[in-house]
Image 1 (cartoon, one colour):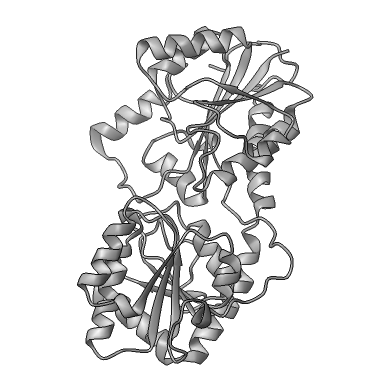
Image 2: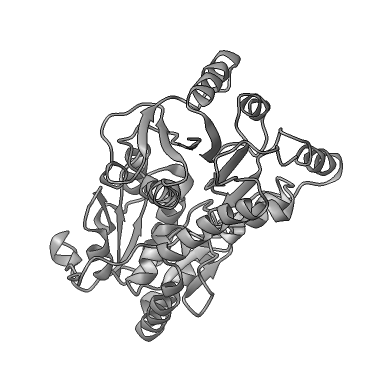
Length: 389
């Protein structure tokens, strides 16, 4: 039997947002396990997530991160010994010389799922022509690329220059909420004065998330005399101490709480008044933004197109010019001053987020693979067939 190989980039016990990729691997295994031997290759295995251990797939240890010649040869031997017909990567290049080697060792389909964040400028001139030519060569580019949102799908066409008919979208969405959540009293939990309205943000404590900018925005509000806010950041990461030091230097210690990692985020969000997400880049929006919306919070975001895709200005939140400290402060001030506006935007955000479901995400993923089947790239009999190019 031919194999469908799913490839992980991190140890099996790594957290972050990998629960979403794990759901993709499980869904593909569920869909294809009767037709292929479904394998999931981790660079290292510590403990398997429950989603993976209960899925109809075989978790193995082999590193596909390296692209040196000896590493690629090791990968190719693995592909041949396991009769791999198709490979599903996440966040890998849309073309690479090693894809040629993979095909020489029996692989017929290579798919990349792009979750990389950030806005990128469209390519022009010679670079545009070169990228376009590369992605039309045989064997060198991927057979299909899936964007984590419609924004990423378009980016794959405009920036990477893949043919549009080989680019698909599986827009990120949320799993069903777990039961009836109880609203947490954040004032009591974190000893916050009752008169303060609570701004909240969740995510990895990384400089790319724009938290330093938000702290400067809050410092400007405090400097102007605004004292009716309190900011809670939920998350851990490599730059947490930097953010704590920045808050101290800006005189915000009494106005900011760093809550660290929490497992009760949905309940905590219900106790907040306003959500902010000043990230320098996402994939059109982020799962955190969707979680804010589901909690009925108005969201304040920059107009960076890789961040604000799920936020409609004056409808589900407020959008300010990216890196504009004054406009960001004014947006927050409006919501602090106008409770009716804040509640209306929050209600509308809660209604709008209903279309962002994990079920729809999985449907987009399976649709991309169905297209490969229709184009006879993914041969369900497991026979080699002819290379599509």
